[in-house]
Image (cartoon, rainbow, N blue to C red; front, side):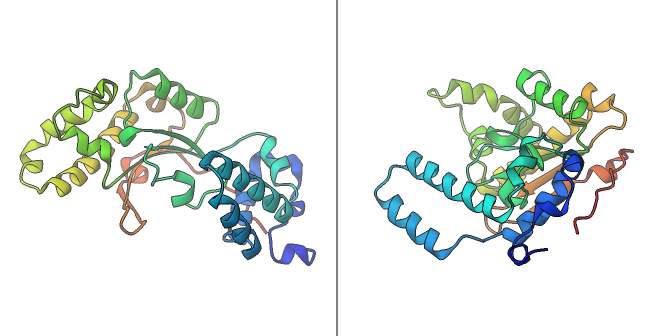
Length: 261
């Protein structure tokens, strides 16, 4: 590898004709090598510019910096990215701005197919979710489906309060959470409000996992993707596994990945 490649991953080491198969491992290696690689001068420049700029404009500026530094570090990064996607994971998460899937799992572009909504709910009759699930399972053939909730979820907390007259759409969306809370009221009623909400967040993840495993899209797939239930803590940034797809008796076998290097 060249001197420049000693400080950042060089995708020229891998053949582009295998990009759709090996993109993930290359992107992982790239991310590991380039994490936190933002020059001090760039940071200072951004700070100066952001002071006098409205938020959308600052985001566009940050994108220019990101694209430029990414291309400098890995010249083939965007070429490989444009060839197609081959994610192994469908991530079903909450829309909360504090729980970005790629950031909290240190995933690179192309690794996760992400679908998020308030309180990471999954409705079997929801065409939006059904289309996502159908596409990733039957077309992309993902190996894992991860439902990730989080503690301190506003949608979950709202489900424990009286419906808001000003939010009819939210009320309809979180109705399954209210029903779930009612089913577990004996336990939740004995807990302080914050702990009750966090416990309901756990129940919610487990219920979405159960519903997903019971869908025809997953149940009838051969092999069926593994469905996992996770929960994220805002207080320490750690993810806890509530339900592992491996222990659920699924027969899905991992596709061997080519090791980068």
